[in-house]
Length: 174
Image 1 (cartoon, rainbow, N blue to C red):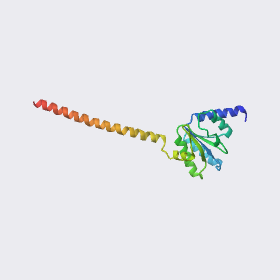
Image 2: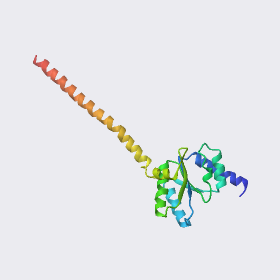
Image 3: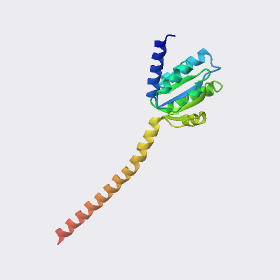
Image 4: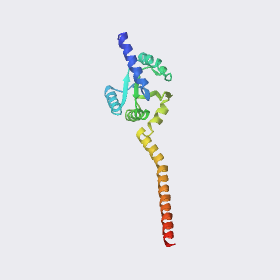
């Protein structure tokens, strides 16, 4: 491969990693081409990218980025799972696929929101609900007190109107 081609690959990978919410380094040893194709398809459908590049090029791409030093994990066959939107979706797809394929690929390490995470933490991330569900739960939690406040204010307004009506009726009698 020519130097210019290598440099282009390094720059492209650095750009992808810079814009990612999370990425995971995986060891895909033991997976055949058919399984890898299925994995890539599932990841793509989830909006996640799977990239395999030479370890030296990936290490070069990481050098200029403000990320934890995970260069030591680029040994042997390494694939990068890059989640642009959120960390949970990529981890879920990896976890589900690994369960179906004899725990392959294995996660070497992950970087989530510019913080290094262990394979065990990646497993815990995979068990989290999706981002949309978390946002819906948060909205519901914020809405409940506001709804109670509105209900209380309506009750107070109804009581106030009742008192005004009683006062008007008393003055008409007098």
